[in-house]
Amino acid sequence: MLRTIRAFEERVHVEYAEGNIPGATHLYAGQEAIAAGCCAELRPDDYISSTHRGHGHAIAKGADLTRMMMELFGREGGVCRGKGGSMHIADFSVGMLGANGIAGGGVPIGCGVGLSAKVRGTDQVGVAFVGDGGANQGAFLESLSLASVWQLPVVFVVEDNGYAQATASKYHLRGLDVARRGEAFGIPGAVVDGCDFFAVRDAAVEAVRRARSGGGPSIIDCKTARFFGHMEGFDQQAYRGSGEAEKLRAERDCIQRFTASVTGAGLVSPEEFDAIDREVADEIARAAEAAKAAADPDPAELLTDVYVSY
Image (cartoon, rainbow, N blue to C red; front, side, top):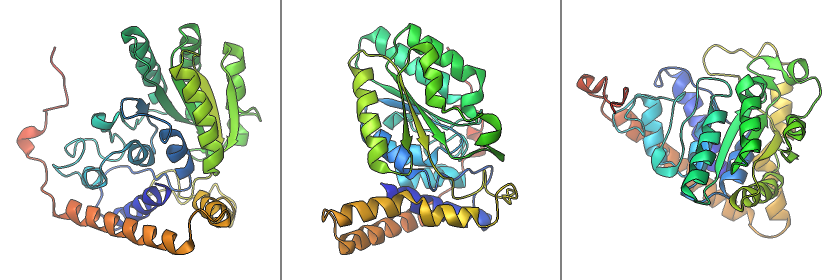
């Protein structure tokens, strides 16, 4: 899963530079351990809401790679029939309720999932991913309040990649971990290394168990690293220090850590990892070629699926 998300994002980076992908595109590379670690604990009937960087979340929840690539290319066969693109990619069939163009906009949706599950009497869980910048939105605190008062089965996953677009966390978080904000609402929180798959997974196991058993919401605050800029195209990352991105890739790569951990423990051999990498590369290449060959949406479909009639 880690390698699949990384390979997908690296291919999108290339295709965007070549002018094959329209619209705004925000890459998830560097943060793979969070999506993979959290979604590994979810069932198919659980739901997630996402941030600007929705590709990794969608893949981890089970969205089809080819249809995702078609969506980014704006093709008819995409998961949103080419109308959502990268910024609004969603796949309701796997419980992925969508990336969101509004910072923090997916957090209230996570509460809606929890309220729905509670009213219907199911044990489904909602996971709301949000960035460190999005966690400063008023809707985030309002969501914590509602989730606590109603004891909703929701897990708030904060992906603190160090920047709210171009503003470093130290300028907008004042040194407080976002997880500690939950203390004011009686919500337990955990601060974990978001570049460590096993640390994220352990926190997700506890938070999802609590939510599913009626114990209410939790916060998982993941300290992670963003390998690319805020978005493709215009961000030259002038706000980063010289060599910072290269240092992150060398020292904070979640895939390198995962590989070293499991090979060191003798669980997977380097040769087996090489085979997985080749399989993933082939799958991503097939998805990209299928997207290039796919048809554009019919202009007659321009307004279908956009407005809902009741």
